[in-house]
Image (cartoon, rainbow, N blue to C red; front, side):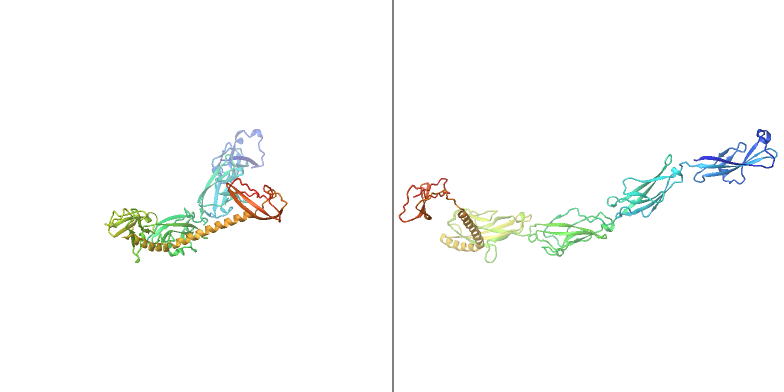
Length: 546
């Protein structure tokens, strides 16, 4: 749609020298009939756009008038009457097309790349944008904007309607991997027209994330006697990056350890993190150990992190009970005990001592009589292993009895050990001599325990004596103010020569005698030479002079 402004430029062309008729004669007859024609030199395209009425001279628009194609049209019009001779004139009609806002802005994007690295700094150019509008004036003046909440912005160029799409802040592919940015171009016409264009931008990855383990540290519980070279556990880490930046490899952290080089009994699969033990573990030798696994990505530069693995071994019932007593000279669990015939019921014959290297229920031992010659004579405590007489011996009882004690642990599959005790009945005198020999043997076995007790007792005694000495020294070092405790005596020369203490009933007395000159005497009842000594054993002490 357009508006047309028409201007006239007319020239009168004389066909002959004869004067034109008077104005009142123009409309009379054929001489006043005028016909209108387009000039012969008019462009043929004008006939498709404009139409001229030959009788009235009206110019009408018959085609499409576009300001963007032509802003001005120039039409030559020829007017001629029907008189004889005919007279004519020429006129140029100038038609100016006025613009209306009938064209939307056009957005042209020149992308440097549709992929932007997340490591790009703020201000990095992503695309160049050109905005055009075929309209003129305010109708062709365009304002450009971006969709909200995107880390990009438009910066105008030195040329009109030219912009640069740049990053406004650092990008994080792990948070947002791609953006759909809508560019809006709006002109200033009435009504305003707008154009929208969407750019799809992908954020490429950089190696900016270290591998992460879900848990650190990791506790692993493993039964002993595991199969060598079998997998015992696996660690797994994840990386927020992509492709090679997220391709992880696993390795044991090398270093000095109390257990030696971990590579001697542990191995980790570098691809999947499966950890295998190269040897079978023994709970009785090793109960726990610790190691670190390193996860590193394949980025440049490579990033890594490590996790601590605590391995706790669990006990299997793989150790049978070991008999400590009785043990014969040949090393077998067999012993001989001599018991006087006159011992009463409940007499302790011996105690079977045993231990189990396992722990918990696997190491809990129970004792039972597997074989005994006379069930009425001997009893066994199933928890302590003590063997006692159940009644007094009689002369009809045999002189020798054999007891086979079964010791078993409390594992799911119990392991056993047996001990044999030979009990010989002897006369009391023989038993006394035998007991003396046994006591000597027991003393040899308990020598170390006695030595430790003596050292401990001596240390405590020494500390106690030292404390007493320090306390006495502190008491003696105190200065006693006796200026108010005694009155001067005329015969006293200032030197104490002796003191005598004695008790009378509940009271304690101290007699202090000065060094006297020859011929001097002590007057009873005098308050001179009186020393008051507190009695720590009584709240009231009386001291008198003699």
